[in-house]
Length: 415
Image (tube, rainbow, N blue to C red; front, side, top):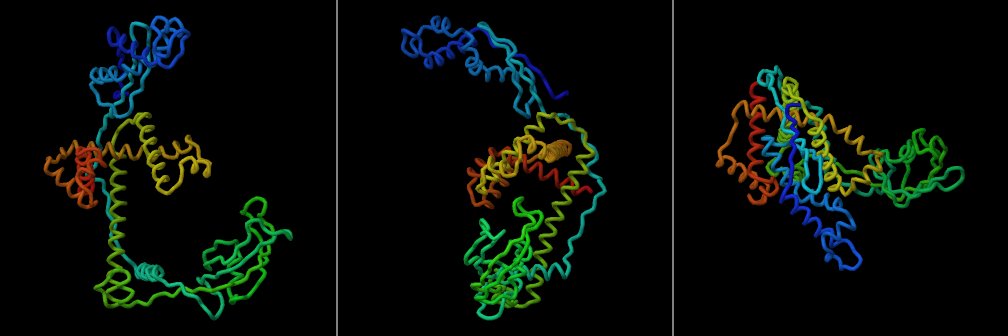
């Protein structure tokens, strides 16, 4: 491919001899030679015992950065992934490296201004509005003890239970003062249905059957649960009044009509944001289909490794170890790599598309504009400029993000 260059770099003479000397001093401190303290044996004695070849690999480490800088100067390209390195030849006089350097592939923009795409208009139906209002009521519902009556749908029954299979106590099938919300379907089919209608203090036997898709040693088997209801709690849905509106943070709302208008506005904003995201995705997808670019496997692999690292960090924030996730799910690195490849390719294409649009449209920002944007971002996050730039890496990345956002605006404006 045109964006791949192989560069041969030889380090010889004084540079190589200095590297061999440094390698000797390091190795000499690690080995014991009869008649000498560690680190005190002469070089000739060391080489006689271990051979000159034992110094090569450490010496390579000492000169590889110098060789890489020379390779970049010779290649006159900017690598987009870590270059592949091979030691082509090595002896007492020199070492020759082969660097395979991959730069950004050539991108040929297709049509990105007249894509024929239309943005949907946000609408909120009466059913959606009622559903959201009910959800907000459920959110602030109060769970209180019910001293009379029996267990109903959506009540929480506090129960003691014990299961028996083949006349023996079911392992793990016992609980005391267990709060079971009727309708949660946590237990096997028939369990919650059997509790509906029971009163406080009532005992009952539920004769049920484990489903066919249950664990191997229990699926399809008959099971008997002895259940006692200790307490019943019901959900009290709050009324639509000023107290409820204030509990939700709407201090200025006084009437039901005003509340419904506010909820509708929130739903509209939410839908508009979703529609905007979906429209952006459609524009990126269509314009990237019109673009021509050959992406090296190494670039794709590098993006996948970045995604896996991000995924690992997300798991860590949830208190889950990456190794544990892999074991529990039966996932392998190869499967995860394969699973993430389509998304990685899409991300790369979108990035190259927006960079090409930014170049084509000559998008740029002054230092003052970039600094003002960075200051605004820092204020929004409640941090200092220094903290923001430390998180981002540099002010150049803030400028890059600004270019990408502007490219997206152009992509959407010209439809």
